[in-house]
Image 1 (tube, rainbow, N blue to C red):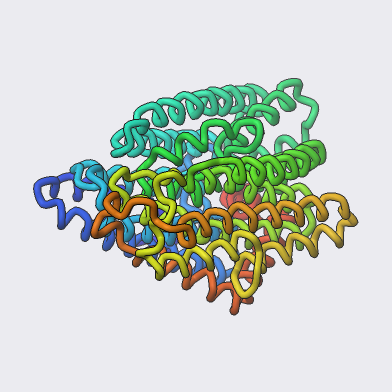
Image 2 (cartoon, rainbow, N blue to C red):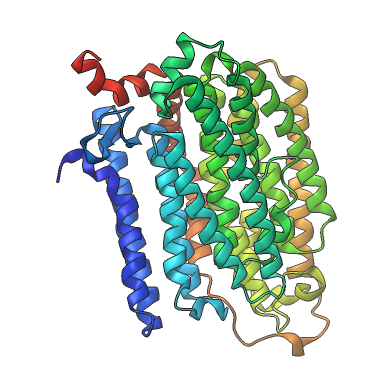
Length: 502
């Protein structure tokens, strides 16, 4: 295999695995085991890709079919791509582990694990795509997989939530296609590196502001950024826990990835207004997300609103645009994925002990009395969301606050500190209701529920990255430096053309 072909592995392994597992539909137990082994192998290939990028200090590029960029399809594994892919596939692996121990009926469907793997294919492919059109193709695969996985939920509102997710995603797809058309009409290319060069040399195309606005709206929908957040609480409340944990932790980060590419590569000279918008929307998201989480009466819904708030922190870091703030946004992105997946799994595990199988507080109040270990995990996760040491959440908030102070954004930092207080309020409120309040009716409890292996491992990572954060911070700093020098990416992708003198 050509050394550059390793970029294909994190995509091809789960894609091939999905077909293989579908053939094993009569052996459901083997489906789960095969899905776990396939995701483990895919994660290993992602780790090897990270190692290659770090070792050589350059992007690994694969041009499909031998067609050089910008004429062919480029898969680009640079620091940002491998950072996001490793994060996503780690959480996806533990999502499979949670599903293996879940008691939901939908887990037994022969298409569940194949769809779960194609969800990973869509997300990974979008993160590795070197052009906007193939990002669109992979994002559609992601949407279709997520929609079906939600529609087969045991929750009676699953079909309704799936429709909401599908139609709001259809709107985002329309935005993205219109942006793609506008860019292609204006510049004759969709390759991100090539577009960066062409836009820099000719920024006066009349459709350029229109394309930027459409891409901004697209990624706002993907990350459920205010005011496009309204679909998320219903969707994550009704989706199977293994699925909602993925959607609220790593899938929403596709929008974060998009904003980073927009502000540091494709539209560098046009990004000042976008950065200001991200800061404003981030602050609004932190406050509205926190207040909405306090007001909700469902643990999963509370965590969905929490994602709105936590993504707000990340957007602000991107908006400040300094080396430290971008590194802080990357650390926040990685750590939040671990924390949010763990918290949703814990909420789902508690709900699975109730005969009503709901995370509504009126149902799960007092259920935690019989689950003390889960209570310890939830408490640690709550500290992490609020940014309390010794968890990785403290590292997130510390870096964001430091970058804000260095940027003299004192008012924003004060508002972010208020957001951290709101986080502590709603997580501790949920903890008290589930683990401190008495159980009104013991007859409504099941003897068993979803296993806690996956959230336990995630919480171990949460604490470990709080106590030993240096490797993650260092990689984030290197990635930030790479992003702020877009010529690194451009030269890596267009190197073949430059070598030929085109």
